[in-house]
Amino acid sequence: MTAVRQPVESDRDPGLQPERTRLAWRRTTLSCAVTAVLAGRQALHDGGAPAVLAVCLAVLVFLAFLWLAHRRMVQLGAPQPVLMPSGSALAVVACMVALAVFGAVVVW
Image (cartoon, rainbow, N blue to C red; front, top):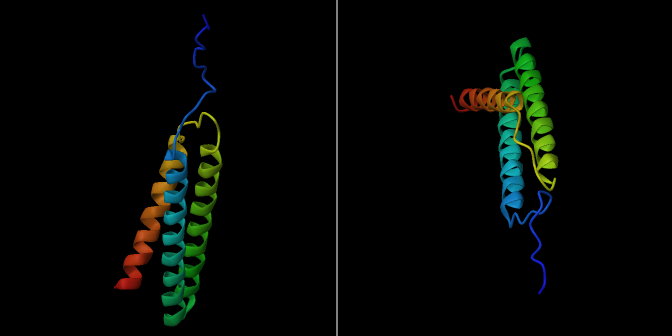
């Protein structure tokens, strides 16, 4: 008889789930980029020192989100991805809220 091999922790059959998650992070990053660009365009169109500040804030928020998203996509490539730390999750939420506010200002 052949011995049955027991699964070990490093074995992983994730299917397409990690790829779908990476694609979701990429779509979210793209939507953040569009929101930041539109907020910057609107702020530059209005002109003045507050517009420059708004553009700088939009760029900083976008870059922070881009860094967080890239870091998470790299973590998802591991055989056993770790849970997202609560600090990173809160930072992502803060970036999303800030970009939603920029988007609302652009539409308003």
